[in-house]
Image 1 (cartoon, one colour):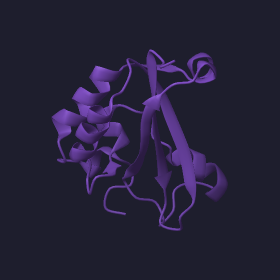
Image 2 (cartoon, rainbow, N blue to C red):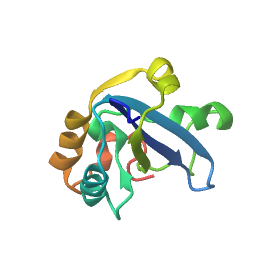
Image 3 (cartoon, helix red, strand yellow):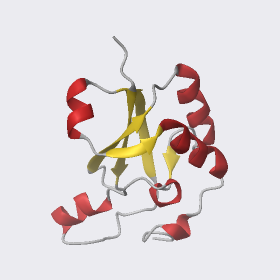
Image 4 (cartoon, helix red, strand yellow):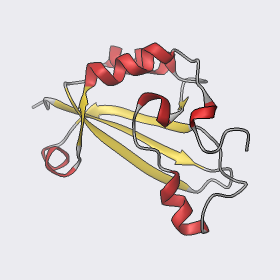
Length: 123
């Protein structure tokens, strides 16, 4: 049975390849067309500025391990998946909003990513 919610999965990968994963719960079921449309809005089909679309940035997860920002940090997060949510995820992941709202945010950017919104622009 398909879920009425979707999960947007993404990660922050620093220059040393340390990773911090993030996900947001969305009302609405994503279709393959939604994933394709989303990818068309991403830099090189996979990168985005979290602050620009309103999803939580994942830098802090790595800062906890490195003692704060460092030279390995950069502005981009990486898209991983947009898929139906499981029952467990629907009860454990905080609701971000509606799937159409997230897709609209990506569509409005349409590969015009502004790294100045990130604390790591120009690093």
